[in-house]
Amino acid sequence: MAEEKKVEKKKVIKPYKPATKFCPRCGARLADHKDRLTCGNCKYMELKKK
Image (cartoon, rainbow, N blue to C red; front, top):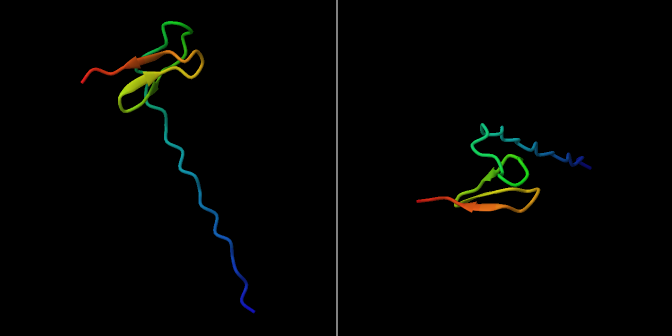
């Protein structure tokens, strides 16, 4: 019988953008989302202006 080969998909890791802004509470780099900037450490959120 024919052997089935498993094909592994490689994850593409996106490079970080240069730090646009830092959290005023804890100093961590803010994650840049479509409509907001968020901090993963202290849950600080800032909405972007349109």
